[in-house]
Length: 408
View 1 (tube, rainbow, N blue to C red):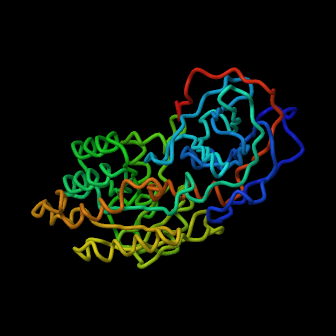
View 2: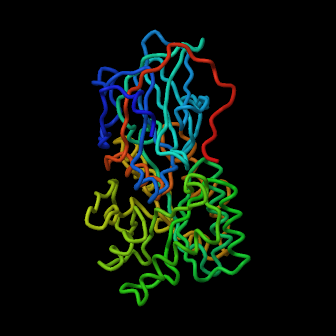
View 3: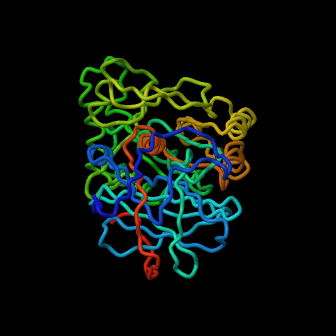
């Protein structure tokens, strides 16, 4: 923890308000020259918490040029945070975005593998430290208008490899994250390598989908639920947002056949999952926290585009979520989209599906996020595990020469 001598009297725990973006007249949560952000050690260990959390600050009205810095130890050098602008498409990275007209800074930061703490400060262009006021953890990452999740089922099953690769490519080229639900029993060595190749290309999250895709009750729930997770972390190098040092995390579970029971739910909590996706439609909401089992309740999806073979309803479903600041969650079986390789035109430019993704993707005001990562973010936002405290700081700052790295 940061030295207690640096702490001011004001300290509070963020309770995860689900407020929509609001005006600069909102009441702040205190002011300081710099800020300490600390996370509960047990939660950090249990879930990794590497996905960047966005903190909204009020910046001085006179400020028209600024820089942001952070560090994880009180005696470490300050690292400059990479700045992004409102016209850039970015998701799930460490960044700062300044909105000078609204007098806001949106600072997205990860927790370091070796520390539960980080410090933050903002300077003007000349390096003078600015007094800033904390507002909230932003609802949708970088204060986005809505969230969009796209999950696909049955990765790893025979004859699904090319379909998933094509599906990933369409989404990746439009800056959309794919949550691919992996059945870990069937893949051979070649298939495992193709899965790693897809992860290396980016914008792909792995969710657990059991070892053998059974109906409940499972004959061996520990194998299906815990074993599937263990297969994933043993066989793959997951994206950095799902790692803490050498430890890897699989926060998302996708139910085989969209079915569950009380044993499955209990085991999901036992094995450290945070989210449980079923196939109920038409939903735009997030599930509530299940305190008895220690994860979010079962949550359905908004729409399954493969059932329509037409972009019309899917576009209207997305528009509804976009206008009302809601969650839009599509899901498909990619191998059913192209009939196991016999209808590859669905992935080609001009098809109804690619046109739909052209419409949904590459938006600067939509949070494209994996199913599991979204629930890691919500957990940090809602469960009172993050403490934010204003600190005293010197009034001059020697600018850092290096940019901050997301993780080692």
